[in-house]
Image (cartoon, rainbow, N blue to C red; front, side):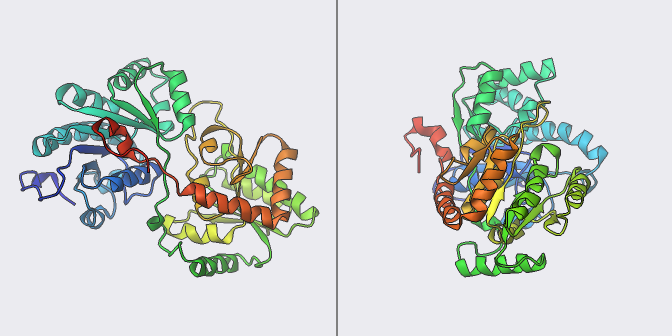
Length: 410
């Protein structure tokens, strides 16, 4: 990791001079969807980017191994969780990203800023007036919902979007929501997240390794190899629809399916979900794995036969799932998916190609999808193969600079 105190050091000789400053308060090695998304973006053009982000546990070792320079503003360890940190972090993010971006400009004379999310955007707005740069802003969903209920923030955010060279959305759903909320002439681009196999510590390209992981996870929960395993991964909150999957377990057992359900995640709904499983007398079939580290998720994907998440849109508009990363990961591991026919899911799950899309409020439609996939191994394998193929497609971020004559699509 390069510290700001080293700004006067000589720039390392490189074939291409970095001209893009990527700013994101969330970045690896901190496990987070936005951080993973921005890291994958940097890996596409390591010779062009400089990263400015917040400190986190393990950042020094991580930063030293990267192909691009990483600068971080400091968070006291006591701020990384808790009430005080939640209050002070936004202010520190805005001030530090603003000041350090200016310092880095005088070192690198970068021409572009790629702002990794909608958070802390006032800093970006100020930089756009002070520096001779153009900028792109990335939006994921919840990161711009927080501006909508405050008239001042909403107005400033709209001005920021108007001044942008382009807006990058993580899904078509996010793009449509943005266009409906803010009527803008600024070009918008959809660049879906991609899978980086290295995030899973195990060798996920090796069939034998995946078989070993499958056996290990199933044995940990006393699940026979012949059983059908349904998997869900996410924060345990009501709108994620874990209860809809649990509701179907006794029905599937009645129809002769030897089924188990594994839930990876923590959240406020955990006790209610455990109570539901107990009330339906399937608590021996529903397994709560708790929080699972990213590097251990490969074992759970390998162990399952079906991946299911039946999320609903949050009607209070204070939460928005712009893109379901877990669906993409499940496809990468060759697993068929049962998912709701709504939101950012539609960028990941194609009906009857890599999964089955359902109305999550239709009990019969949901059960028929589960019953069909549980009983048809050939269909599961067919959807899984197609999903693996689809999960490997990507749009390169350099398409944002196509006016420079660079390659746009892989």
